[in-house]
Length: 212
Ligand SMILES: [Zn+2]
Image 1: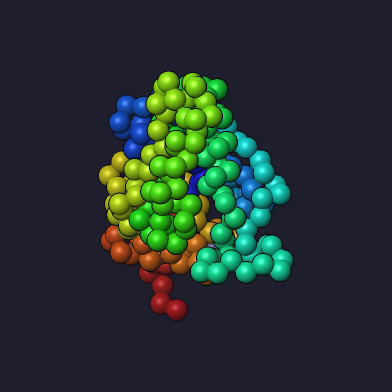
Image 2: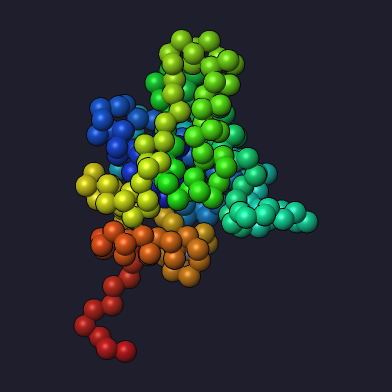
């Protein structure tokens, strides 16, 4: 399971465990990724007692916001050019090494509307490419799967709650810091999705008993 430290990938870890899989986690650390997000991935991997947690570092891989002189039309500042071709290629190498049956990505239905490299066409084609490049992956029929592809973010949160995912360990903020900032796009999306799901976010600060 590609584990970022966010809610979707954490839900995938617990979903696969729930389905009886022995789970290994792979975290790709790139460019300006918040160090707090890597800490979250480590905490989640530990909490889920995964069989192994591989951390791959690609410091030169940048987000669109950090690339000067290029405009990526229709894509958010957090877009990483061809991110998934790189992440899933690395995952395929790890899978060939350990003999994995499935490579799991936590992309929800909202992601697929924004990013072309999250769509079914991309994954079907990449799976064929990986099998063409590896007799071991082809013999094992190692599949690329996206179990959250039909779920909205709010529906993923509902699933996470039912699987008892430790949501207090997840990180959604685009900035670094001890606490979520609740102002950046990552935080705003998280807040909105929890509200839509009607579930209390354990990391959202609750102010009780005081009238300001
Ligand atoms: Zn934030």
